[in-house]
Image (cartoon, rainbow, N blue to C red; front, side):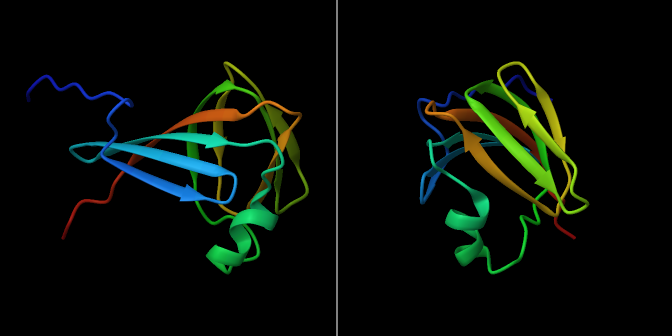
Length: 115
């Protein structure tokens, strides 16, 4: 194994969606994403028309470093996240920015190995 270093000043990939910017860094089978949600962003308003699913089907694991986001699970449970909160959000949810500050989330995902 070799020491590695990358920086979000030069991400491997940038994805833009309505009110959302996702910057990705890949290291082996790991993906680290810096997700910046703008005030007014809501999954069911901004992403649902693109995803074409009733709820977000992604599993999110990471840490919030700025702003506030509220998430509602399919079973009705709601939780609000803010700076310093580590989140494990299973598929089947809606989410939205709370307040007037952008919310920033660093997500960590282990990519599936090729078969």
